[in-house]
Image (cartoon, rainbow, N blue to C red; front, top):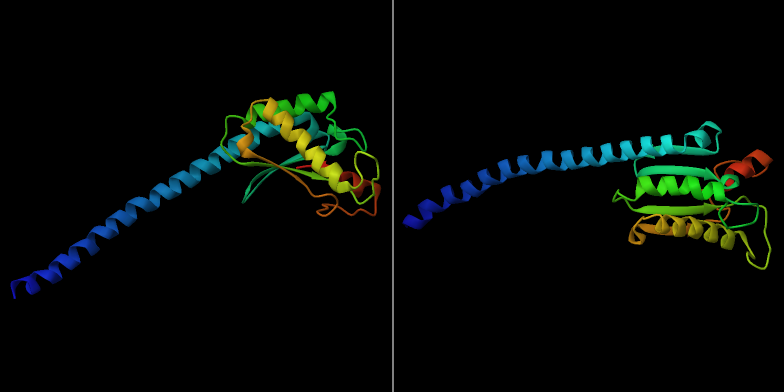
Length: 179
């Protein structure tokens, strides 16, 4: 009968021990989240600074969102029309971006986007091939510039995710981009 009398106090002790443990874990989660947000903020500022002239010209936008940082670069800055080879000026700008991204540990997705004007060349039968090849060109340069390839993904979206109206030349130009 003595064990039965001891059981209730023993059951209460673990319950009391759980609460302080829960309180200890909660702030740690907040600290790591705020550290991550601060790293993102710092990275976004560095990207804005490195791409400053292009940002000023409206050719690049750097935005922070719930899922991370998005850098939209107008395709005219990176490629000749209908081509996926990076221009020399683009190589310099993207190498500066890669130097900022290399020491971070965030996953990086490079997206190629086109307007809705059809392309049909031997190298690029459709905008899918063009957008995918453009994204791959940027990924390859990032790897050559020291970004760990395990963090990188190249994706081509063709004309499926426009950010402007394809009915106008200005809209089509905005839609031709690498994010």
